[in-house]
Image 1 (tube, rainbow, N blue to C red):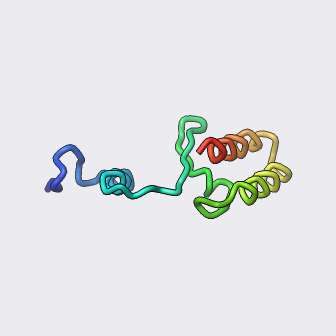
Image 2: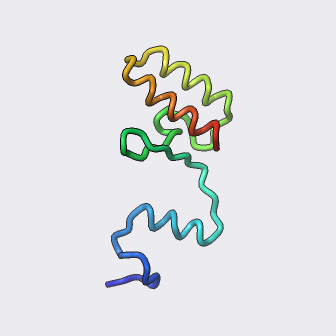
Length: 86
């Protein structure tokens, strides 16, 4: 059975909720970025609350980068830059 919105399938999932929020004028604090063909939430990657202050984000980034394997450092840098661009 289809919902009231004819353009979206019933199983549209979280993306459907995001669509409804935008339509209702609700702003999201989340910040998503693409890495290696996948979408990630930058705040979750750096383990800080969504909408966190930039100084907290920078401290989290530096901590992750310090202990990360060299192959993971680029991933954390992408998350950090996505938040700074927001």
